[in-house]
Image (tube, rainbow, N blue to C red; front, side):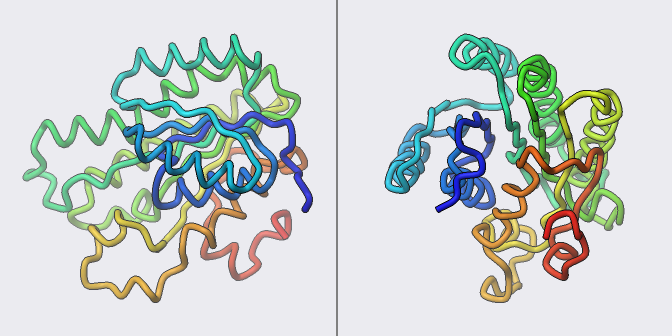
Length: 246
């Protein structure tokens, strides 16, 4: 089997379930060493077993992404152990309340900001020097269609995703003349627990799975992938919209 990411070091947040778990397995199959970040040790160990069963290796990092200082410490550990980071995937996120804007409790609003936006800023802040040390640094973050549609009752989640898009596009402009490429993926409807919470009446069997979308992430991690500052839509990708991902 081809291992196009052999020798690459990849850091993945939200690695233990949903889209993150699918990405982790796909990165393992592609040969990357994965630094898996998740909230619980048990879930990380289960993913580690699955990755080792594929003949790959991972490093486990139990972490609450609201612990911003821990993100900085992780940057130091990656620098000490590998001296670079080839792939950064900010996948972790929370849905928050689906409610009128005026009904969102301040604590839940702050949680959305902390996890969906500030944690990703802290990741870029901590790992930018290590991405620059790679010969082909790739940063990918997960957005949503509601970032632009501004759907009623989705104000908390949509606002953080819109801000994340702005952050990543700005970073992409800043690193345009380097070997780094930074982009976002809009997954659309995927069979995850977050989707089930948002759309409780939906039949999950009608949706694609995390394993279906994961290969798109891998293609965007490859050294030959040169798009920068883009929000790429998985549903469009399925229909062959992106020749550069064929």
